[in-house]
Image (cartoon, rainbow, N blue to C red; front, side, top):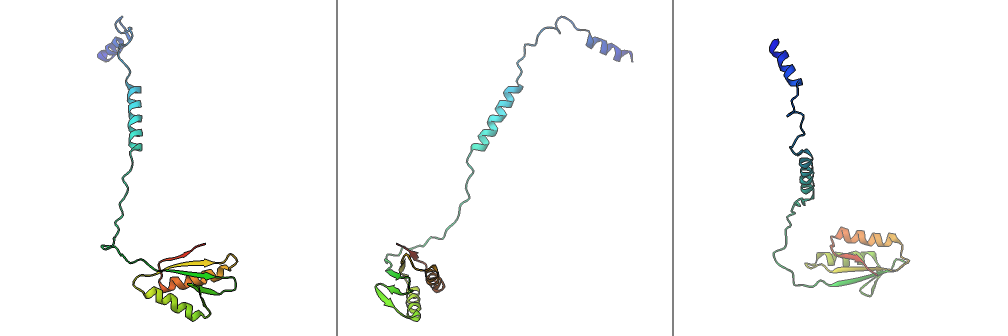
Length: 139
């Protein structure tokens, strides 16, 4: 017990050397700033994007697809390359013939401004069911 009390007394008795100011630099703020800079650097590094593998065609097709202009009016009449189609069966046959060709034609649908949306949607549904890939609504 006596050694412990001597140790406590020696700690509380300060000498002149102990009362002098510290000459060491406080590095804690410096380390904090460096850690913040490292975190900012890690955050700003771009993340590598995941690659997507695509099956590209081995040969390029030199055949230029035919362009079919289909016009619709508000009464529901359809013109296929300036030829008026009066029967729905004829329209379905034309769409099927385009879909079955090895190089599908591009179909440019030009509805009149007052054509009901139901007519346009029905035509697009027919082309989708036939398997056409290149159908567009143009002005």
